[in-house]
Length: 219
Picture 1 (cartoon, rainbow, N blue to C red):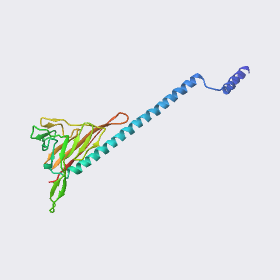
Picture 2 (cartoon, rainbow, N blue to C red; picture 1 turned 90 degrees about the vertical axis):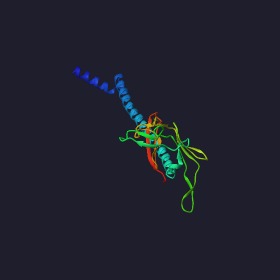
Picture 3 (cartoon, helix red, strand yellow; picture 1 turned 30 degrees about the horizontal axis):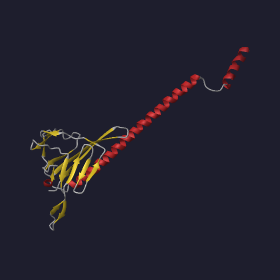
Picture 4 (cartoon, rainbow, N blue to C red; picture 1 turned 30 degrees about the vertical axis):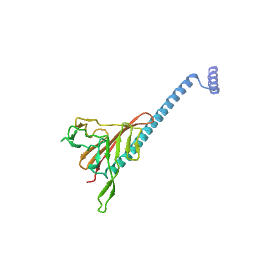
């Protein structure tokens, strides 16, 4: 009887006791730390993903807008009004049989250009023939920006980038399908434009993107 009373007394005392033991506090803190660590990890990962996605979207929009402007103006020009920065005609590209590389004609010259100069028509005669041309329009693919220059001003079309280029030398360039920017003359009436660039996100991640098109010139 005495033992039963002592047992009941201990149970009653335990129910009436307030607070937690030191071990219970340690366990609770440990579980809380793990829980908040998992939540924080997913928040940071989500922020990084959103930042990369936003950077990719903005880079694509900037390059796309620039490419459309180049295409609209170049398509109005003719091959005899297009040249490099030194006013030399763009060298024609000859592709190898396996299409693995490109070669310029003449083979001793460069064939990937980072600056292109051309004119667009500004007037026509009564027969519909072009009788006047604009001043020089110059597009330049610089290491950190893409610019357009005319007789009035120089406009920065894309900035805050690192332009990716394909090296060319000794008449040869890298694989034409490789990742790189440049202007290339594919035929007497076709110019290929490739814009490849990198931009850093707010979380310091590098985002790389390439777009391009082939412009058909006036005959």
